[in-house]
Length: 276
Ligand SMILES: [Zn+2]
Image 1 (cartoon, rainbow, N blue to C red):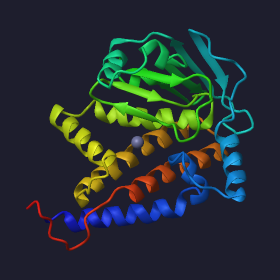
Image 2: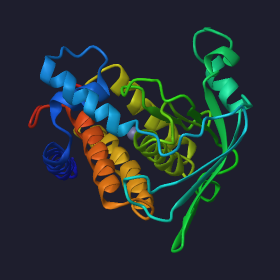
Image 3: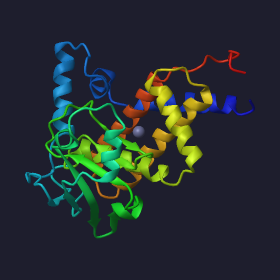
């Protein structure tokens, strides 16, 4: 293939960048894997990371429904940025169908007890306003975790088939906010895909989940998808965050990308694949 060298070049280049800019591996492992062996030094580094990423911007608790508001300046910069999320506890058809597509487990009301449905999010400062529903259509459902208890390896997903975005972290924390915007980045791209592009994307993700060997072209597509989601998240959040918070978001972005580079098995260079 003409494009194979350029695909390989892309994968190599982005892999190097992610290795340079990600969080140190001894703490990054905790974002990916609940069963990491740790020595005492790692554990302390992990606790420090967790404390930073899960520190809430507000003391306000989530109710069954209402509006969560806070100012994004608590010790982290972002002066004058107001965050406002309108939410309820409805389990809508998109989510119900997604849950029903999985092997029967608990009733949705039990599974989703600690989640809230986001109706809209508006973030604004004197220079700029972000409106979630301006990015992602009303036919998409957005759910977020409301008690900040889940460990760091719970992140989120965007499911284009059922049009559900789910964030397993509390969006009133740096980590939860980043995960949400990363997933919205995926969703925004998903909603402009044709049905066949969507099927292709889902098939590639299925291969990733099953740890199947990807062609270098497939690997590039997945890595690029992740970079695009991070670009949307960083490109949006940087307007509302102070420099320290932006640095944390960047580290999360590169750490996520490095994880994909590391976990995607790929064909060796110059190998002649059997599927020709
Ligand atoms: Zn992603």
